[in-house]
Amino acid sequence: AAPQAPVLGAVAAGGALGALARYGALVLWPTARGGFPWTVFAVNVSGCALIGVLMVLTVERGRVTHPLVRPFLGVGVLGGFTTFSTYAADVSGLLVRQELVAAVAYMVATVLAALAAVWAGAVATRRLLDGNVRRVRDEGRTG
Image 1 (cartoon, rainbow, N blue to C red):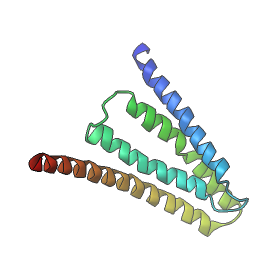
Image 2: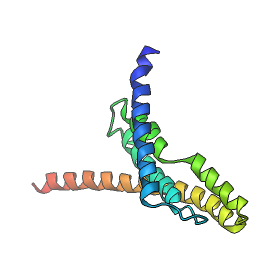
Image 3: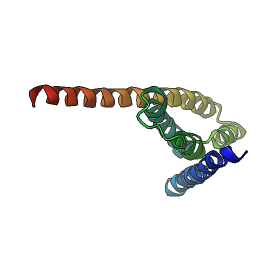
């Protein structure tokens, strides 16, 4: 258990920060009573885009190698920031209000947008990294 203490601490600290960021977003951009949950949608989609970026930097390209980065940022910050439970509660609320079209649209749009965001975040990060590598390589040839 002792070797896991730093990982657990990183996850806990990151989770607290991510949950606070989500709460802050909900305070700054509250959903109107009976309205569409745009803030939770935006939080979940943006969090997924950042997960795509993080996975490229840590797993795929190994640019960030500290062993606590992924637990802190991925599981902690982004895990606390994104929220499946609020998404599910929002869907339930829409169904209770008998807003079937909005509930189904929210369910489907969240899943599709979240998957697209992970993909887009990963692709953008790869392109940015590859562009920097090419630029440095080209500068080395001309310099």
